[in-house]
Length: 314
Length: 274
Image (cartoon, rainbow over all chains, first blue to last red; front, side, top):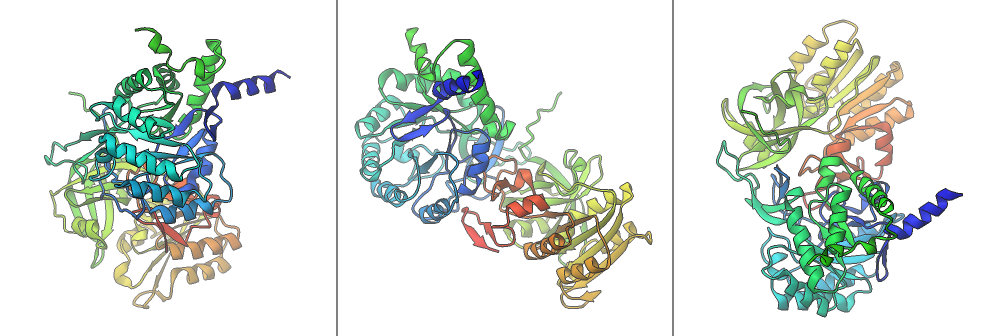
């Protein structure tokens, strides 16, 4: 039988592993997109994701901003949802109550102090979670996110605090706004981070020309979508060149060829977000299929052979 | 010059007309070509500038350039919407979501209060298709029931029926809608039940429909942020209300039975009892 043989080869071709966190394919649903609540997990699994990253969770519940919170622009979306979440206790209870967990789950976390990050991780250790992603890069909420993520000392303290309690890999999600992204990632790595997700959204704004009023209730939000892809590729490339750490590429992936571009820049897995609004959740499977086809056509045995290949052209 | 189209961005339009439906329910008509061709049961995101943006079922679509929403002052944004005057600006985007699927047959429609909003355009389509319509209008009192005259005009043919229930007995039959649905289901066989209103009422009607093995389409409500399947705020079980709903079928309602009529997510995403 030829079919099972091909399937097993493909499984190895596209699987991703970071310590004890394993995915059947390298496509994650990005944080804050559809996969906000554990109830939707089966649907995300059926759509072909390798893993789901949850919306960012904090110690206490947070309402976030009032509507309008999301607005479409040329090449993407600007959102200022404002890190709304039910708080870690309500979230863990819901996740623990799931009858089955059909795919790996990465919990995104945010806080304003190292102690909060440590507390968040310790509360999640008793339930079935596969990886943590520290959101050090939300561009539109004060005192958390980017304010932590651009200070090397704060990043070191937060990563150490999370690692202290974690039995799972810890990723940090970084912002393209940082003056020296390589420095921050180096510090995170030295503090024990297992990987980096690059990039979060970019600070952006939309004004309605009839009323003269900013559309988002918070005025400023974060830009995602194809408009930021080239910036994300550059960030992944820069990190990959200087720091030896697994990179999860994120930013404007709407087609399988975008994912390949991220691999070539140095990412070994990718996250997809805004594309879901354009093409529905099934875009995840389309991207996986496209990657497989590309690997076959180019006689590449596994994604690892592609990772960082663009660096050979200096 | 060609217009740039970003469908998920509010379009500023002006209030064309305001109709007082009852003492505290009004219909706001605006010009918007996209929402004017929406299907019954679909919703629009209505932006009251400087106040907020909320999902509203479309209660009126002329198929050309005008649409309307029917609103009662409940929260901050609905209150501001109710105070709008002719020629005031509002933002609108949509239409969004999956609406009702109309059938040719014997249909029972049950609407509670402003829940009648999506049932009005549905009634028009069902009549055009030649369906037999029994419309149950329900409310706390006569004042809570909009569209009374429109519905009488629409259903003037004797093959259709109009039934009114009020909690206080101020008009029609005294009692709650679901009790009278039970009475109707004993007397007559329906091919489809369509309903919109308070979720407790929807759940009771769903249970009755299941007992009699009658398919149902129910329009639900949840906290919505983006409206187009990106943010996940309106999650119910395996569904997103803004894409898969707001109208759910019997099969879908069975799948979300852990939440339907039981809990809804609030602004921070926490499940709270209904």
